[in-house]
Length: 419
Ligand SMILES: Cc1ncc(COP(=O)(O)O)c(C=O)c1O
Image (cartoon, rainbow, N blue to C red):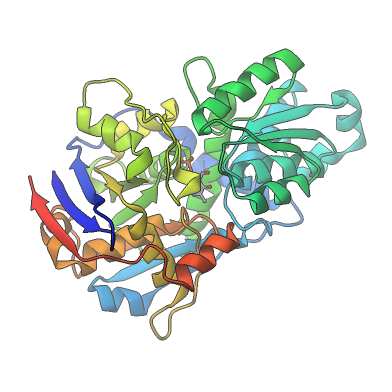
């Protein structure tokens, strides 16, 4: 285990980058449903929406040279369906799958045209989809419900950015901010859904609630499927994936674990904010139990501010992820600045706090001499081909400017402790 500390200027607060390795054989639970074969069908569903465009996979050759690796590829999800984040992939696929399942249509009949057809709408009547969200998932649910002529109810944790709330309301959702953290807001939505006959479309699973989140995770595989095609056969050696409840990371890790079985699998690293590092804690404890983080989950990475792991995601990450990283906000802020101010010749990527978390960690691991032992442990070097996903754009524009324009959360000198 490695620890580095980053000291925030003018505070006594000491926050560290911590990493734990989970050695394993690279075999385990079945990841078939997240593999390329099924992902191709999921992508065909998304492609049936008029808004569908493949998001770009940026090859940041200048940054790769600067950081001393062979390639850095970043998928830019700010361009997804005009919604500035990837989350709609899961929301639309789960609502589509739910409707197909309810009407006994079969997954193959799943398409935008079928879902908006008069006959389907007549059979369905009026449905209400409910969810808890930091913003991006709720926006995807509200957008899909509106597209399909259905209703949505969205609750957000306390402290949610007002601009995110307004964007969800603008899509016709009945939306409000609660005085609870994310995980308690999820429980609140469950109770409200049970009372009101709403369909809970939540992007995390727990025992007894796995069908809808499973569809949501399958929905995310469109990103991995597109990225793999865009790589044109160049296998990534390393994946860095940011996790909130872990559904996105689980789905993308599952895709690549199915594509490259056993020891062929790329090295997979999961990164989380240190204030909501439930996967890191679960991997570190390694006692078969899930370890939650409670309280305010106070981090700028709003999309990653989740204290309880998604059960389906943990099964996959337990068996296929190699490293779990817990890191302070400054690292994500650095990722935003690195992507927003590219090396000459590279494309600019506007990436929000959660979106830039993985790139921030990659930059820190490769640039910070104090992190040399961790870099070696990760097997990063001149031959490494790194794949990251910038999962959102500037979904909180006010904060984006504070960080990128005003220099909030400055990168700090780090000391390192190897354990
Ligand atoms: C922009 C962004 N990135 C990453 C994530 C993490 O996804 P998950 O909660 O599935 O781990 C989220 C979740 O809301 C998000 O909004």
